[in-house]
Image 1 (spheres, rainbow, N blue to C red):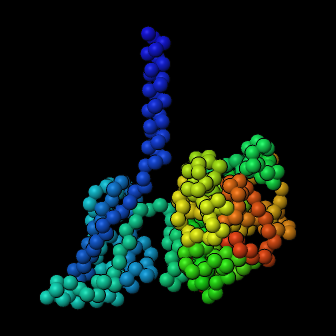
Image 2: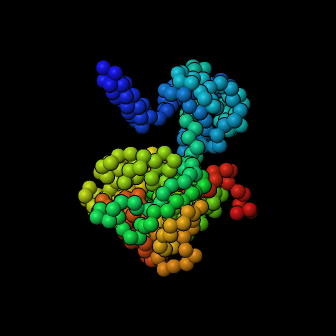
Length: 371
């Protein structure tokens, strides 16, 4: 009886651990809903509903939500650190952003008609920031630094294994910020005023037919327009982010799903065309389309791996071809694995070549005269 009792307790312990693991993996992220505001002269009351405890931040727009200012600091009530779930209220007084929107109350209607220009954005603080270029907005997500095993450690008889992906070696990267989506045609056109893409008709499609050199031109212009110092990811940063960073579940493809169909557009499901970004499941960090759709340029020249541990590796100092990662619409499944490598001539822009953006910091942009 002792043996069976012990076996039962151990079995129950494993079941409990599995349940806790399932909850940890599948528990939904915190969400904010039902955001409303009321303005009475210089006083503004913002209300919202929060479903789980979270850190909360607030922005305001005075052009109907087209552009938003910096995150607001002077307030009282339910914003800031560790806000508990429920119906919440934030109070503001004499917001500088609203001074250009006069408070002229229509006493008959009981409203200020100019308030239709005001939009409050209440969101969960996730270490990200939203950057805007004209009417186009994109989000940069934080990728907390860490150490991982880079490269393919699968047996040679499995198609996911290539000599170029070996040997597996330990790599450490610092914290950086990566764009949630591949650069879209909308963002490219806002910066470059043209569209080189083969597949068009939807501004949310990833831009493609972009060479490494053209991507660098875009990045230079975007940096000048916004004040942020954008760049391409290093190959190590890209693989670390694709694996899910410090939140990695260790899957072959980017994301928690084991089925590539759930996370990427590749030769089996793409119909040989690109698709709007963000239509598949994200990975552990909230990054979309890290598998398939378009290949993504990295900053590294192609070179063979070494076994020695590295910190923030940048690749060879020179070479013939630049690294691309992530697979594309005509890639086989193994071409979308987190460790798979591609490399192309930097002056060529193929119909499946795109990219995404990286920042070292999301601090306030530097003034133009310091850039």
